[in-house]
Image (cartoon, rainbow, N blue to C red; front, side, top):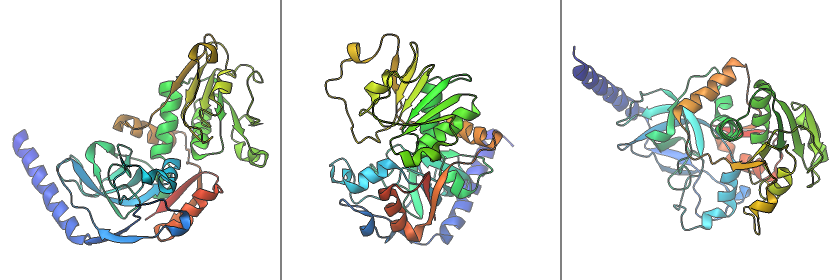
Amino acid sequence: MNAEMSVEMSTEMNAEVSTKMNAKINSKMKAVLLDRPTPAEDVVLSEVPVPESRPGWVLVKVRAFGMNHSEQILRLGEIRADYIQKPVIPGIECVGEIADPSDSGFSVGQKVAALMGGMGRSFHGSYAQYALLPARHVFAVESALSWTDMAAVPETYFTAWGSLFECLRLKAGDTLLIRGGTCALGYAAIQIAKAAGCKVIATTHREARLPLLAAADEAVLDTGRLAGTFRGVTKALELVGPKTVKDTLGCVEKGGIVCNTGILGGVYALNGFDPIKDIPNGVYLTGFYSNNPEEKTIQEIFTFLDRHHLKPAVGAKYDFEHIKDACAAQDSGGANGKIVVYV
């Protein structure tokens, strides 16, 4: 049998399996639809058509998804923006199984993770039973984790991984400062950095939350002014954002790197920032933008977690029917770790 015939037969078989799978898919599904600012108490599940597959896109049966700060921003205000498709199903990540592979190389039932690329803003996202997603932002994964643990990984760990290794060039022996450690991304960064052989100093601006940073080597109360209080910090992950980044630049040693990844402080840009005066001599400032994941990196992360026997810090789990409660937990900030919704 030649290669061309083999590919043709494989495509036909995949199409046949896809057709059988589609026959089992209901024409309607439950989803969260947003068209205006929506506090948690107003979040409801609507019945909408299951998306039809098309070339370049794959239909994913959503098994679980993690909730993110950017989705909260969308739900509470950004939804007003002209660049948001409305109504829109939010959700920038999910894990699940291929329901219809369309013309991709995936197989029906294959375990996948999906994230970013416009999910939940430019096109419908993951707060649904099915999601039609660009094939280039859907990645085959192998992992021993459960669906709910897997769902805590894609966006959070990809962002932590990229910030630590691509931007901060983290290596064993580094001393890492994580400013804003009591968020899902902070917990993930602590976990990864410790497994990589680093000393970790993590901060929180709430004294009551210091015990939540027990996995770090040192937990510090953030007064807003920490420059000059540390010795030996070689790398810093800034999750509070522009509100404290100038101060964080003064926390690292000469030759150190600061990566601004988060905006927990609610300040989104720096006015009057003077790079010459505000960046100390010999200190480097960078930032990580998580919109361009690659399959190699996603699988590296899952392999790293399995190899080090690590489980993501899941703060709370909710059934999809209780998505309103999940949004309320997100708005209150009471979940210590990633909020995961299983479908």
